[in-house]
Structures are given as C-alpha cells and as structure tokens.
Length: 141
Image (cartoon, rainbow, N blue to C red):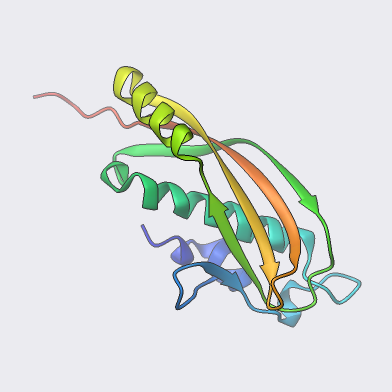
C-alpha cells in the first residue's frame, strides 16, 4: 500500500523523498499560529512513517493484516521552520519478538520510534507509535 495515497496524508502534502524517507514540505497549508509546522502535521508525518516502517519490515504481511495504532507519545523539541523528514527505527530484537508472537497467535504488537528532523538535521520532534497488528481471517473452503 502506498501510504502517500491515503487521502489525509495526501491532503497535508506528505511525500516520498528520493532517499526513501517520508517528508513534509514547509508550506502555508501546514503552519500554525507561529508560522512553524503545526504539531498535528508533524504527528501525521511521524505516524505515517511508522506505518511505512511496518511495511518495510514485514512485506509478507502487507494486505494480510490490519494494523492499528494502540497508542502513541510525541515530544516536540524545536519549532519546525523548514521542511521536515521522518526517520523511523525499530530494534532488531523487537522485530524478532514480533515475528515470534505473530507466528504463534496471528496477532502481535510492536513499537516504532520516529525522529522528525528539519533540513538542517535539527530534531523537531520524536514519537513512539505502538501498533497492534491482527491477521485478517480468510474464509476456508
């Protein structure tokens, strides 16, 4: 699934960049009252990047599961006054634990950490996105 085609993601302007990361251009449509990128826009970029990370880590599950955010935590560190890029990460041990749990139960949870940085590599926000992923039941014939 191309996450940049989700209507809301498309509406605010999140884009796939040449380096493969997701970014959000600095534009009037995403500014707050301080003329910096709105917290909600930064959150949307980070959350979308966390979902894309799941697709990268588990390509065999795309279209076979329903991933939903269980909860998240965001910390805003510096005003974003330039275009921003999201950098998601998941430790290898978390991937292994997810795979083990999912293979046993058909569902599992995993956390994705995301740093949002501006064009000067300044961290503007960080987030942790806790996903619950459930296999789609297929009808047996």
